Length: 353
Image 1 (tube, one colour):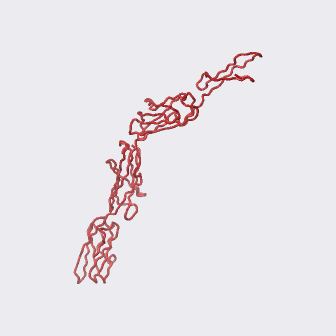
Image 2: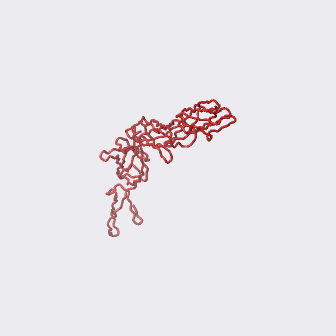
Image 3: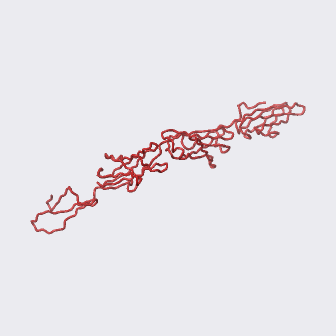
């Protein structure tokens, strides 16, 4: 009898067993132990007989049973011939499999406290293609906690979500690993890992109220900037931080103050510290908690000249030769009141002064 030379047969493969008996033999029976459920009582339909050589062949399909070690018993007898039997140990090897992580990337930066969507699939490395059935266990381990994955029956991917709470209390600035395990009938176990470069919990500075992305103000006007500063994980207001005025093109050192009553960050500012025109400015926030990230918000501000008017005197009639003062009022129409120390000129005919 000859058997395959390889150390074992792969699941789903067919194995050819060659049996030799004396010339003229016409029947054989192949049996198996329960651990290898090959068909028994082979007939002329599945046993090839070569009467002249006494060689018989029986095909055993290993997909009829699970992987493992089985014993095939071969018995042969014929009238006038001695009855004989022999056993064949058939080792059916589990197929190699691979666990492919579709999402997220193998190593990626991620904000502390944000959820992570995970999508994977299993591939048959021997026959090719995605494994669609027989998966008995597929789960992810992260920081000693198990998260089971769910099958998507449409494309045979498996998915889960690492919740916000999984990273909310972890220290940022470190790399954390999440490993996914899969166990499948007749396949070797497979696993894969992705790594999280954990960043500080993101924060956001938002313009609030009258503070808008494009502002128009008047020179020498006193305005108040309002900001809302929160962390994105739970939307909690940040009341311990430093928010500075940056990037304005002027040497301005201003710092916001937290208003406990309104829950906003405020800065009162006199626009006389800037020049006429349109300028880009930014406010940069750094939380006192090192687990929270920094943020920046910007806006443009246009500083215009103060609107004024000249109020002329009441028309008067004077005789030729009269000399005296002609008065007018230079009025600040925005803030109200007269404007002092201005440069005023007059022209009458060819005369000016």
